[in-house]
Structure formats: C-alpha cells, structure tokens
Amino acid sequence: MGEGQYRLADDVRERVNELDNAVVAAVEGNDEDGFHAAFEEMLDVIRKDGEHLGDDELETSDVIVPPPDTSFAEAAGDFSGEGLIPG
Picture (tube, rainbow, N blue to C red):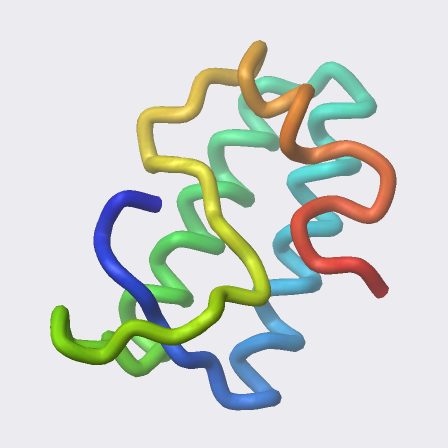
C-alpha cells in the first residue's frame, strides 16, 4: 500500500481476509460504495492492528495491498476470485 511492510497476527490476518472477501464481493457486485467502505476498513485494520516493520526490516511479503487511492476500476484487477488473500 506504499506505506511499508506490516506483520499481521493470525487474528488480524483473518479479519483482513474477511474484509478482502467483502471487497471482492463489492467489486463483483458492481457496488462502488461497498468497495470503498470495505477497502478503507481493511487498510485501517492493517494500520491499527498490524505491526509496522521498520525500514531496516525487509521481509518477503505474503500479500501486497494496493495503495489507498486505488480506484474502483483498478480494483477489478486486484480484487477478483479469491482476492488478495487466498482462502
């Protein structure tokens, strides 16, 4: 998301996955307002409940989250099928 890396505990990852699924459903349902609400909440959960890694800590990323200014049209390419987080 252009804000560095975050480490997510299992419970946070589960919540992010639920929101990822909500974003996919909104995109597939052509619900732009629903997309923005779920995507913004997903970003908030990552920022608030994730552990932000310092610039000197570089790890392999399991998931790369699109930037906060991702448009609804752009989201169609990122949030489809199983979304960002499979499962």
